[in-house]
Length: 417
Image 1 (cartoon, rainbow, N blue to C red):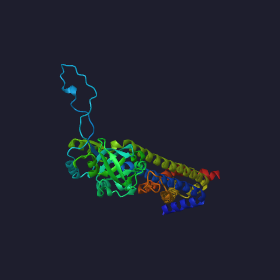
Image 2: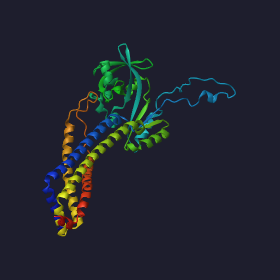
Image 3: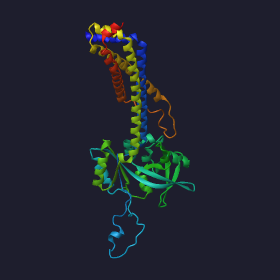
Image 4: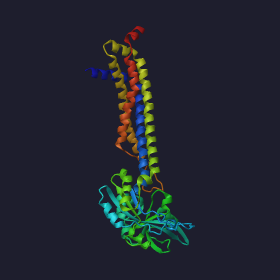
């Protein structure tokens, strides 16, 4: 019964100063709206940028690096004589992974491995008349590349599966194709560093969003790339691995390096600077949103303070009729939480609507042809954080005025009147 009475009194005080109450609620609503919109947009942008790099990056990459010969001439020279040696080169070895087929079969049995994709990298020159442009052909297993790295998302024109069914075919980087004026269906010439020339049919364009990369990079099937390099079917230069748990990548890289006697690089090492940028943008988004809520909290604090001074008579009458200081404190805390709750609920609603509006704004750029509108993330976690912070901020904003109201002496108020 007493709780119902406290709620009724709090409602009466709220409606008695409804304009000030509305201003406070609008302040909270605006803060939550901008918090949801800003966080959704910034995390959506982070997801987009992460997708450009991280979706195309294996969790662990196995490869063979160029290393100096372990046995240098000085190690085997006669120590009793003088030796003058200069310009010692690395040993003459191929970039292929030894026993790659067995490694692939073994990795597919690993319960922590989501999938593996073999790759053959070939340095070539694109022949444009009398001009040779440097390029790199990535020989890939098209089905594995699509399953693990969303290959089709980066092929805006052409069918990526043509690499598998059309012999001697290539998907050119869009920037390289523009330089070469190569249309889909055209046949281009590429030359290896050894001087071998090959004709390849263009079946699509690849567009990563990084123009410098698209000027050089292109894709073909593993078999076509091995043919260009005049290598056997066992020739594999890279094994790209996707794990079920990306956080295990550094540990698995060390493990694979020891087991398979090859070089290994994990995604955290390869993209440390990129991940730092994403974290900084997220921190800035949270900081701005929380700052808006704190500013709204100061507005509620000021409004409740003014309400207490204007309602001194009402507070005195309440305490004179048997309400304790704790009851008065609860009344003003209820007022603050009511402002926070209703302001927060409408803030979530308008935040969702504004995020949806941003999501409809056209975002057309030649670098990202598959992106049509601004990216927005609708993660429910943001809405939970928003309403929790709304209630917490308004509770703290109303705590000090409520404590002040609970300590008012009704005798002094009535005597002063």
